[in-house]
Length: 281
Image (cartoon, rainbow, N blue to C red; front, top):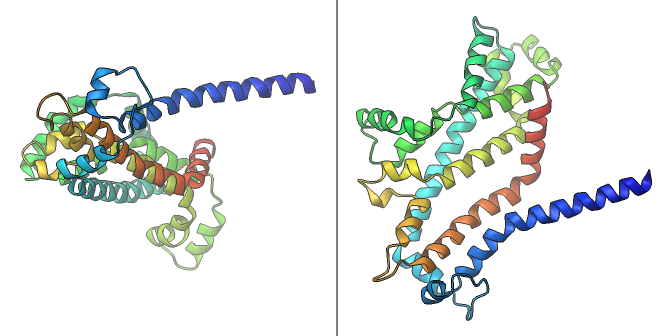
C-alpha cells in the first residue's frame, strides 16, 4: 500500500513539474526576448537565450510609449474597478444569503444561468451607446462603470456561498443588540469576509489589468487615457521600419510585474477564499 502511495506521489510531482514548465516557459521566453535587440529577434526568432543582453529596451519602452502615463491609467482604472466590484459583490452576496425578499431564488437562478452565456464582443456596441449617452465614451470611466455594473455572477456566487457557511449566532446576537440589516453587514459580516474579499479583489484586478478590447474601444478618441495593455500594442508600431518587437516584449514584462506582486502578497487569502467559497453552503 505504501509503495502504491509512493508511486502515486512521484507521478503527481512529475505531472505538476510538466504543468509548471508549460506555464512558465512562455513567460521565460518573453523575458529573454525582451533582452534582445529587435534585429536579433527578427533574424533568429527561434532562439531563446540572447546573444548579448541589453536593458535598453526597457528604457526605450518607458520613454517612447510614455509608460508612466499608461501605468497611472491602468492603476487608476483597476483601483476603481476593484473597489466597485468588491462593494457590489459583497452587498449583493449578503443580500442573497441572508435577506428574504420575494423572488430571491428565481432571481438568483436567472443570474447564475448567465455564467454559461458568453456574450463577448456582442455587448460592446450597446455598452458604447450607453456610454455616449452618459458622455463617458472617451474615458476610462466608461470601462469602469460597464465592468463594475456588469454583474459578475461568479463573484456574487462566491460571496453568497461563503456567507451561507458562516454561523448565524453572531449576527443574531447583533440583531438583538439593535443592529439592522445594513449595520450587521458592515460591522459583523464584512470583517469576516477578508479571505473572499482578497479572492475577488485579485480576480477583478487581474481582469481589469489585462483587459484590452474594452479599454481600446473607449480610448480610441483619447489615446492619452489608454491603459498599459493598449499602450503595449502601440509599441509594436513605434519603430521607424520593422515592428518594434523588442519594445513590445519589454513593455509586456513591465505589465506582468504588478500582477505578480499583488498575487504574492495576497496568495494565501486568495486560495483560502476561493476554496471556502467553493465548498461552503
